[in-house]
Length: 79
Image 1 (tube, rainbow, N blue to C red):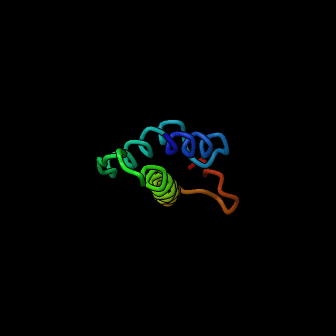
Image 2: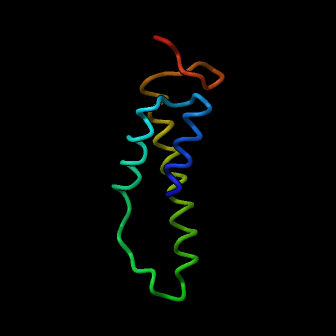
């Protein structure tokens, strides 16, 4: 569950709020398609899904930062 790891890391770096973790994970999970891993290509599929999920989490984090605001160092404004 890579999106969880990335979201928690962003929280630990104070780039997102705790409750943003859930929103990021939910958005990433909702965007996944169900696929069969019963193929010779399973490992490459898993790697591609991991790569795409990390991109989705990064986009979700940027959306949260734009909506809620941060200062130039990436830390949240206290507005």
